[in-house]
Image (cartoon, rainbow, N blue to C red; front, top):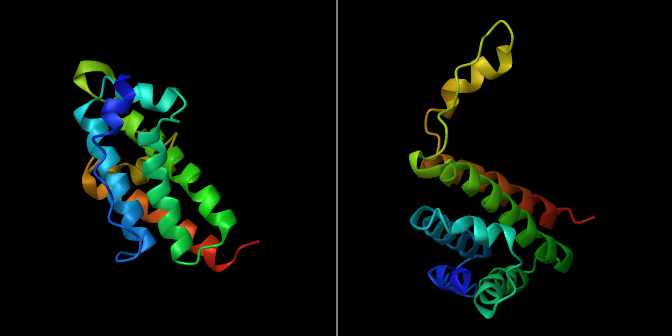
Length: 152
């Protein structure tokens, strides 16, 4: 299956024993991003089909094992990969989609009609960059840390 071959390109994350769970997640996320950018025509298959192959399960196993080894509650370790890959899939589809010309540029907003969007639009100048990806990934990681510190 083609999606398995593409997923096999996701570089193995470091084990959670010698690296923290967040580093395992970050490396997995960046590797997944690299795959999406290398294979933008195939990437939608990864998002729209159940990924229950041994290759996909192995990537999830690295993430949840690192979280459990770090003492994150099982509820957090169970939910976090779904949140992570929900973010990754949506973000990467938006960044790699749009056909051969790539994603649409950030539009300009009329400040009279959309003052909030117009004020924030300059902050999207790095649309699709690694810096943008890292900022958003940090929000996901911060949410996992917060939930782990305050399970409930």
